[in-house]
Image 1 (cartoon, one colour):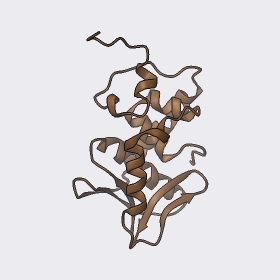
Image 2 (cartoon, helix red, strand yellow):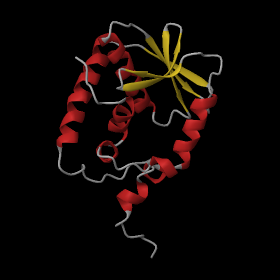
Image 3 (tube, rainbow, N blue to C red):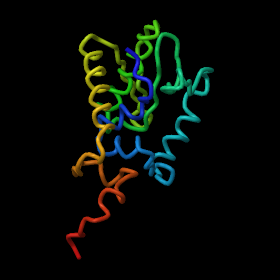
Image 4 (cartoon, rainbow, N blue to C red):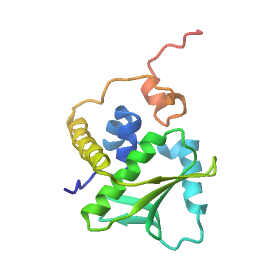
Length: 171
């Protein structure tokens, strides 16, 4: 089962905020001017210079940060969104398995200087399949999912878009 058209970033956004997923998928992109996004892009360019295969696009569907031997490596600034990071890695491992490639995953958190190993299990595969089906349902909606205030909203590239109509409590 391949899910053409769904990218790793969409899986990540699905795990973080379904509203962000919908907006991004409809072409409403706010990332270009976001400092954290720019920091992440610079990190990807500089991380693991010894690896020859970096930023690998697979079947015009998803992009893997790097292949590192028996591992797929994903580089992240910090582990603040570790559940979404794991889900994105599971998606990559699932997609590779669908193409006959069995790998393990490594998520490297540069700020913490930590690495997490991720393996695709039956339970992980079921989570990915469920997420892909849910993403398709979300993207078919005529409007974005409702606004939910989450702990990381203030640092999100979509913050001003989502909260433009909110009243400042101190005014």
